[in-house]
Structure formats: C-alpha cells, structure tokens
Length: 208
Image (cartoon, rainbow, N blue to C red; front, top):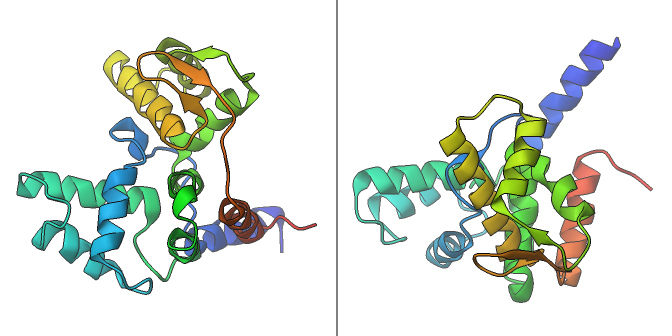
C-alpha cells in the first residue's frame, strides 16, 4: 500500500470513529454549548440512542426550549457538528460513557469531544495551551492567531465572532477565567477527563 492510500485509509478510519474534518467547525457560529448538551442528555437518557432520537428531542419535542423551528434546526446542526450525536461514533460513545460518571468534568469532557471534531477549536489549542498561567488572552490576540492559521479565510465580522466563541469555550472548560478580560488559568481535570483523553488518543492511533 502506498503512502497516499495509507493516509486515505487512516482518514477514513478517523471519520468512522467520529473525528472531524481538518477545516471548518461550529465555532464560527457557536461555543461548545455545554448548557444545551446537558439538557439534551437529560432529555435523551439512553446512552445508546440513535441520532434520530436526538433530532426528535431537539426539533420536534423542543427539549432545549428554543423559540422557533429555525433555531431548533440550527441548534441540532451545531450540536451534531460538535459532538456527533450518534452512538455508532466511538468519540461520542466515549463522551456519553464518562458524562454521568464525571459530573464535575462535564464541561471539559464536552471540550475534549468538540476538540476531536472541530478544526477551529483544534487550531486554537496551541495558542491557549502555550500561554503562561496568569496571562491575559484578548479577543484580538485570538483573532490574530486564527488569521495566522487560516489567512484571509474569514471576514472581519466572522473572525471577531469566532475568536469570541473560542475564548468562551476555553473559559467554560476551565482553561481561562473572567468575562470581559480572559486570564489563562490551569484547568482542573477529573480522572474521567484523563481516561477520555487516553481513549481519544488510542482512537487516533497513539500508543505507548
């Protein structure tokens, strides 16, 4: 098997497990939506539920309390992009396995799953994780990082909203603190977060 074929097979396996593409992501429009995810899992309690059960809960039953049919549809699409919402996907199945077992780690679990699926979130990780604790991270500095990674891809308005969403997601997961001014801090992972990270790494082919 040549290198191109091997790379194609590896990419197919990653997609089958539930990993996302190398471009794009829900963070152009939304954050990791932890509150919506919590309410959705409270509504759909079966960890092996099929995708259409999540779709029904969000769109038909309005379990998340959205005001319009359009908003319900967009919410379903964003949550699907971020998490998969499909028990046949190993990445999502792992999220649901640890979700009820690690209540204190739920926000970080959500970030971990979204990281595996959202290229925009992944692209922001080196910037966040390399920033020393106690350092201010502004929206503008995140915009600069995104523009460096994806030059000329986003309009000024989209770049601004994407940077705000990314900073908000990292804040929800505990890597940043503050509202208007974001400060880098150390996250507080649980054993379940560590185990889920190992699981994701194993799916991605990391060993040792």
